[in-house]
Image (tube, rainbow, N blue to C red; front, side):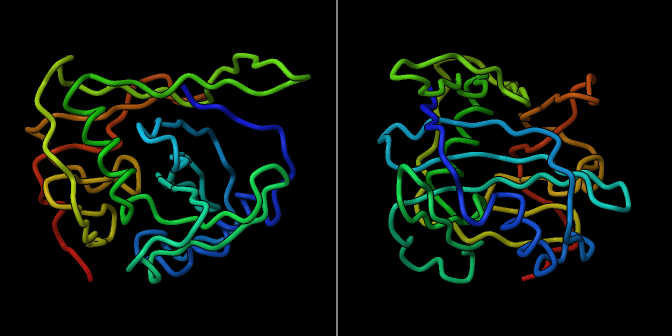
Length: 211
């Protein structure tokens, strides 16, 4: 269950994403994007915010952008820092590429292996939590109770349409770069995308990798 606080955020998530995307090879140089939806996962320790955005570029590509929000810098991840923001309730937050954050990678792998779904979202309003519908929905292809490997230090490798993180492949440009997928998958839907599409899968091999 994701607890969300009504707050002002400076800069906004859309502004942070737009400033960071041109530095990513898989973005096609995108800057300004239209945010279509997002899904969240829970951090079992309750420390790290995990949120993945779906965004459409000006040329029509849909990008998949997992992010994490932390109360302090993530050791050794300076080059994966998307930026910092000031949250009116939580204070300063360090925002990272989720593919470089072991908490996000573990959440993705767990969802895929166990047939998991996005976290329920609850917003604090007038002192009481109110359920909010997610703007994107995801489903893992695995089964409850399946064994989930431990995730330690992660070393993402970006390609032109996907990012490899060990056995996990996170598609960055939806509909491109997945090829034939034999392993377990995470699929998603959002407004305007009623047919489930692959967002990530296990098995490695995004191909045409770039460091």
